[in-house]
Length: 412
View 1 (cartoon, one colour):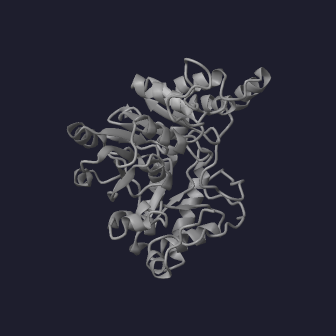
View 2: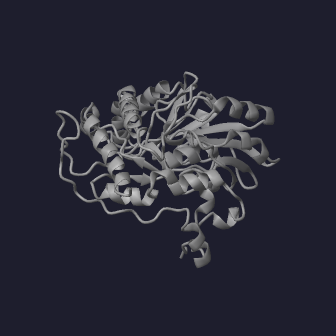
View 3: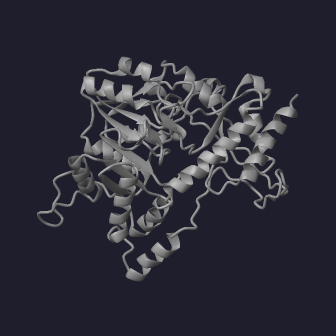
């Protein structure tokens, strides 16, 4: 039987200074009117929930009526074409989830044991795991303090003769600074893959993210800007990458004869039902992005008045889609991030902490022990994100902002 990875008590005592505590229990709040004319009707304000009031039901009904509910059916093709077009690519390869999309992209590029891939340590665990699934080793880079993306200035020092590529993340919806990354990769003969799970609709210098590297992966989990419940997609403009990815996604079945396999393939297929939802969601991508951007502007306008909070930025070359509106709780705020979360939870406001960096995870701790990534550690210790979904209203933004201010005032 597989055994869980357990760290010594002495290590856990040190990590407790950085990693978040348990999730605070949410309590039902009494609706109130924080801004003129808008009564709050939800008893709890979630971090993010899907908005499914477009063509989702109609398209899913068509799937059921046609009896095409598996991985064959017209919505797979239509969704792949629509989403690829929306992110500026020629090809889309729909997958069962964002992690399988990322693994599929890496497997298609042929990395394996002995290879290295440079990734940010400030990342959700799936990014590192997808590299490990191939047998390759993730090499970590610290975050930079403003956008929370990987620190481009540290990239060159992390490249070795075994490095095959750079896997970057557009963190929480803010595009990474792609020009120097692509320039470095070209000079060193490396590929670039974008983990764009959090950045549907984001743009770098006017170009959609997901179209800037050799390939990209997207997630359509329920909290993403567009969703299929579970689901993902590889996007690329390289016909050979698309061809191989399609083959590997479906057990690597051969065109020559059935049950004939020349690659080690996977079962990473998306269902027609999921694709039907995804197509309906893609039709509203720009609408959902603008909702998040508008709510981010409202948060910034209100929270900028409160001392001790570092708010998200938008660089001049970026279109940040604010998948999640994150804040960093500095010492000047007066209470810790975890205390703030607990006080918000008592008022029916759900939050999430920032990612726990890869180098602090129990399954990777030994591999990276002794390496230091101070910015990622500070983001882990101080960062949280507030409710950010497409169902969030202006009144709810005002309520959340007011409760953040009140939590601070209670400590003064």
